[in-house]
Amino acid sequence: MGESGNSRGFSWLVKSCITDSCREVSRSPVPSHCYHKDLLPSAAAAAPDSSPIFALPDDVLFECLSRVSLSSLPSLSLVCRRFALLLDSPAFIDLRRSQGRLRRTLFAICISDLGLVTAAALPIPIPIQPDLSWDTVASPISFSGDLAAGTFSQPRLAAIGRSFYLIGRGATLRYDSLTGAVSLRAPTLFLRKKFAAAVVGNRIYVSGGSTRTSSVEEYDPEANEWRVVAEAPKRRYGCVGAATGGVFYVLGGLRVGAQREEEEARDAHACAGSMDAYHVRAGMWLRVRAVVPGGGCVVGACGAGPYIYVLASHSVEVSFWRWDGKGRRGGDWMRLEPPPVAGQHRLGGAVHFACASIGDDKLSALVYSSVSHGARGMETALLVYDIRLDEWSRGPELPPGLRRAACACVEC
Image (cartoon, rainbow, N blue to C red; front, top):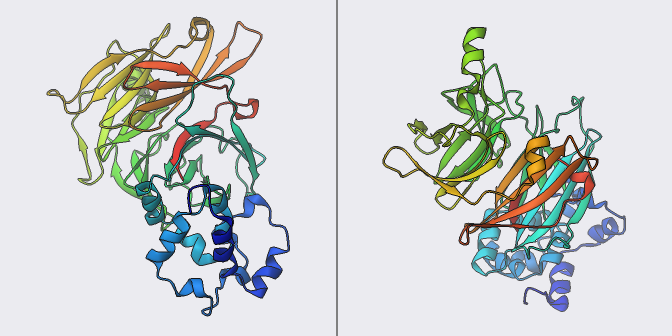
């Protein structure tokens, strides 16, 4: 079967696993947002030993499932629990990657206080044409317990495999980009807001965003558990995160948590253009003397290849930099082509960036400009930076319901 799928082979694969009880369950409509292995009915989760497909070992099943078209994979997740587990495993993603069947997709996601998860998807590589449109999907979720208003007003987004983890202030959500399923996960141990988050080795690391702790937390998706792995050298608020080469970088923000108020007022802006680097495997902080040239404030960052790319605000302009951590003095900065942000946006209002790597050769930046002197209000733009050409292109504007969304790229 090719990527387009073979309907006859796919039908045999599905029918061989479906018992009479499964067929009874399938007659009842299942909402798209319930397509998750943890929400499958117990009758569908149990597979008969007599089914011929279940006599196959996992590696043969992987080969069969990997050749099913992308559009049919969500249906396979509903067949039985074994299929759902296999499709959700890193080994399945690795196999599809080796076969050249994975597709990169850029997602922009936001969550309303009413519990509506809105996601917009754009396939990569992106033909940079402003007239393209995003594929928008809304998935409702029933929040358990009383979540405070604004819990996900400025979430941090981390992608592992085909899933996104949206980390808010005291709550975490998992969003399956393949099925659209949304589920609550374990919250961070400490309440955080405007903190740094990044993925290193299929684990999520967060730091900053709290005046009460300098702890760095690690999240294990398999165990659904957070744990403290280190104490940061500085307490930062309003920082951003990035990762490359097994190192978690915490950039920018204000320094908070000083013992005395006068010290905090004096040192608050000392972190604005600096970064701390935590080597995950070694479990230690690296001594890096990295400060954005010209005293800019870091407003966005992400890792791509061996480098960290940083957007910095200098009041009247936005600059763009590449940082190489292998420099003689702990790192070298290179100034790159700045993003094409309109002058009136920089001077007349606030500019917010959400950055993500979409491969080793391209970066994306969602730019949100709140223009105080204009009548159009907030504007949103997708900008894509081509690393090889050192140039920016403008993509399609996001839908109105995705203002101040977080963005990340997945393969599925």
